[in-house]
Image (cartoon, rainbow, N blue to C red; front, side, top):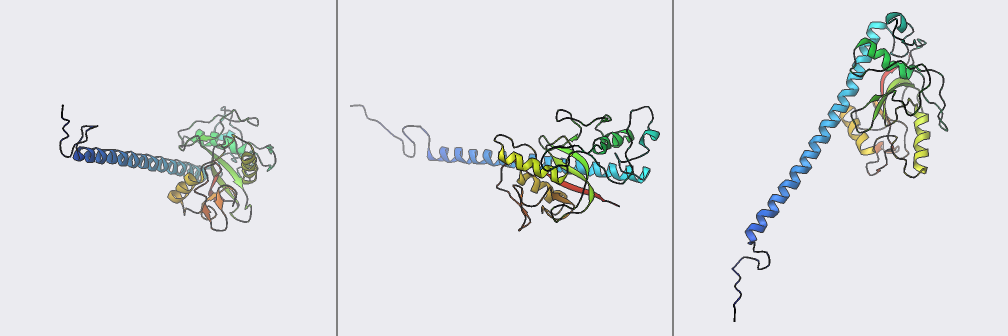
Amino acid sequence: MQQRIVHEGRSASTGMTIMELTVGLVVIGLLAGMILVGRELLESATMHRAVSQVGRVQTGISLFRAKYSAFPGDFAKASQYWPGQGIIDGDGDERIGGGYLSDVSAVADGSLECYNAWNHLAATGVLEWHAEPVSAPPTAAQTVAMPGVLDRSYLGLHHDGATYGYGVESNYITLTRLALGTTRESFRGIVYGMLTLPGVSDVGLRPAVAARFDAKADDGQPLTGAVTAAYPGGACSDASANTYLYAQTRNSCGLWIAFSAAQ
């Protein structure tokens, strides 16, 4: 009769010692930890670049205003400074107007300043992104906002008032997934429409991503500071606790970053 011999401490089915199994599990754990750390480092680097991008836009706007005593897009003498380039003047009222204003449907107010602000900045050479003049209300198929660092995001420039009982009247840099200029009111209407339409979920940032950006750039709270959520409550933030809804997975957060108070 053939005797089956199993060495002490070795599995008959696998031929591995307990020590080998332990080492294998440790290696797997180390690899998993390295993947998680690598992912965190990548996310942190991406967020740092996103905040730096907004900072460069803020610096560009400040330099523009210091030199021309006007905001880009709103500059009433832009075509005189850069003749022959098709540059379109603003109305000089200190507000970067335009975009879509309705909370029910997208209705352009006739001004194109929020789009031509990028063209004014490009004319000075303070930004790497080149934007052409916009002479007619754009469609959703056109890219008339600066592509952002965060996945499928866009930076917009727009004036907005103190809405929903918080915030200040100011010109804002907006951070959403919409390439068209919107006010808080318009963004709110778009988000509420998104929440009722299946498969439509890409108008803003996930609350957790918005919270990380806010924490790195400002105070980490959606209703206070220079970085605020588009509106309190909804699918982005808890207005009573002034916190972002981290568990919410819909891309429902728009961030409004104030860079000037209206005068």
